[in-house]
Length: 458
Image (tube, rainbow, N blue to C red):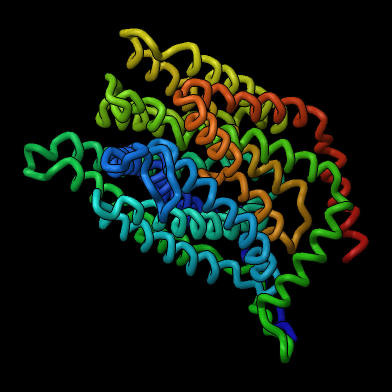
């Protein structure tokens, strides 16, 4: 039997919205410091050292031969394949038990600790960074589904685009501030008597400390919406979760437009996340392959610029959603993303490569937060109440840094062709197909379908 439902907290409460947004501030350090800036190039360089000692010039991860600069994309893909298996069932358990907040705390803590332990990734234990990333990325994705599922509860329908954009903006501001500290430590490590590799390891661990510390703001201000539901005698949460999940999958046929949007999002966000996760590896690749490329300090400065510009970009896209509509705003952003991918293939070759990379980074910053923030709030409008965690578990499969097919395709094309340029161009597929599907999503009908379903099941 369930306990009586508690009184629902106020909607659009500024204090609770701030606490909710602070989790974006907290966890975005993992996305940027780990997923975008430091871990990819660091693991690639360590794997390259291991490969140099191998007869086939490949690194061997538990006996599996891997191209050094494909190792990190493979880790991303594997962690997300695990999310495909685990996240929907975790969402179902959270919706059934009303333990969203407790589960968010548990997985955030595991992810943050795994991130802190990346400090121990060295040349002798280069594989450890991949293992810890897989654990951290899996638990990161799990915590995010519970975080995202609170959006329809804390913000009214007319405020969700603004609140979602505010959360993304806070994320960029938070991890931008941490990157300032990371950049200072990395650039001045010599003067401080700290070896470069140790500075990188400290920066990796700092993301976990940042994540865990600021998450406490969220946990103290975010209110549960329902009393915890007790299990029936003889049942387990896993068994009940599978039953709940199966029921949700069967009811999805009532929401064809929502499924159409989810398919479009899965594709175009896969492209976005792959560009974000491999950007630094792509720019630094000549260093790995023995040529002349951008040094780590330049890469960090570019991405730092992106973080602070993306803060304003996310807020701008919240305004654009109010002016032009959420779907139309997303379409505009995808056109820009496609242009960025094409330019990355043809450009970045001559002596002006660094300047071009800065310009490309500015273009990314304009749409980075907006395309994702508006997608999150639009999705909140077209899913049924009471099952937000389950529906956001499907959404999260292709959210922040957790796309799987894009990194896999990128890694395979790179390994087969021996060049990162054809690999980056292969990502245009995701933006083009997403742009072909999204315009045909009828958002108004999707909202009507949800309301009709909720009325029938009231």
